[in-house]
Image 1 (cartoon, rainbow, N blue to C red):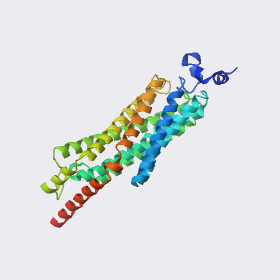
Image 2 (cartoon, rainbow, N blue to C red):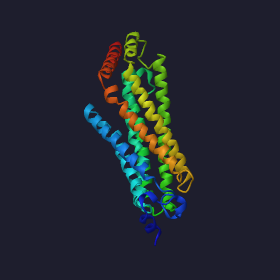
Image 3 (cartoon, rainbow, N blue to C red):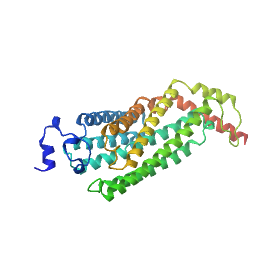
Length: 316
């Protein structure tokens, strides 16, 4: 009886451990825990469904190709891992989970960038190093580049027959480059966001040409810094923080190679990839921009911004 037939002939509850089979003949070096896979499929599915409902309710259509797409990718990826528990030697579900779990969080980052750019408009562009438009241009471009690189690497890796082959190593290195690009963009974004909040809290605006002190508009913006926007800021911090932890893990994992200790340790993947992304997804569900940011408070902030622009235009 072949190795595949031996594995598939046992009951699900008696699947062999890593020590019971020759791991060199398997895509995984461990047996994925079926219960964990089911849990992540269900939880990611629920979060994705809520994201779809929230996008429709608040008519924030950009959440479909960002937060919703991210959740859908995670569902597909973890479904691949679940499929693997029924057919361990199969390459298709193994490569499916590699590609999807690598690229799926990228669209969620785009949602974070878009939301923060809107937040700077409400609280005051004068406290931001970049304008909202440039936040979108720079960081969304970085996000797309990282997505393309990771997708290209995943495609090459998916075409490999084994994880020890040259194509698999090449694909892994390309995916690593995409993850590093994404991690750098996240860290730069966090530095800009931290500066923005510091300047806003301490009322230290970045004076640009044509700007000047405006006590009236500053007082109005202090009024906007209420519970809703504080919660929105907390939600962005939680989402970004856990995605950064996940990116660091992925960088270490891919840098260690397909035969390294990190990629061969299941608990690392479950905790530092699956759980981190799941928390980020639910944080964005809970601290949703639809009711915390894109509301009457946001419209009031936009009105103040327009008032300031008109005042400066009149002075010119």
